[in-house]
Length: 174
Image 1 (tube, one colour):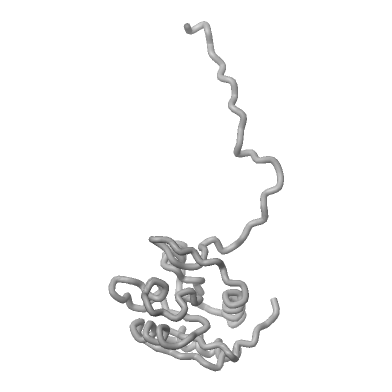
Image 2: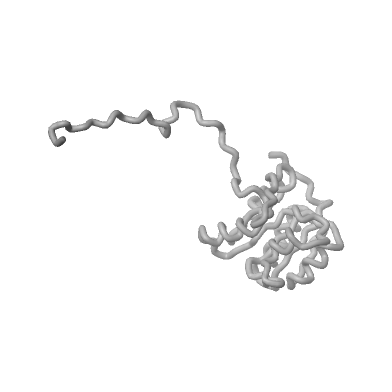
């Protein structure tokens, strides 16, 4: 994968003043992102996303809900958003399978768990920008396709289709 120049990208970082958010901002700066906007409140982040163009959003998993919606759902579904298909990365300290599935189900592009390496952030950001997954728009879901990997077609015999076996009937019992 060719390394991108991130200097022209604007990134929104949502979260409190925690060590993880500070580390994330430092890593983005090292990656070359020169325009990093940090906000602590989800409401302010949504205002910015409706007024200004951003390349990606990194949000702390503890971002508060708005009107009963999580931040990713509000970003995807609210009227007036400039780019409802913006890549949203959730940053979590410990991500169990159910946490990742929950984030995925509300429209998060990817989940980053701490400790975060600069290489991981740059690779995930570059992948989201250069080869984004297709978006699914449905009544219950709006977000990137949850199937992260495209699989090659299966080669070989299909063992799932089986011929029905002839039933053996014991005529001595009849």
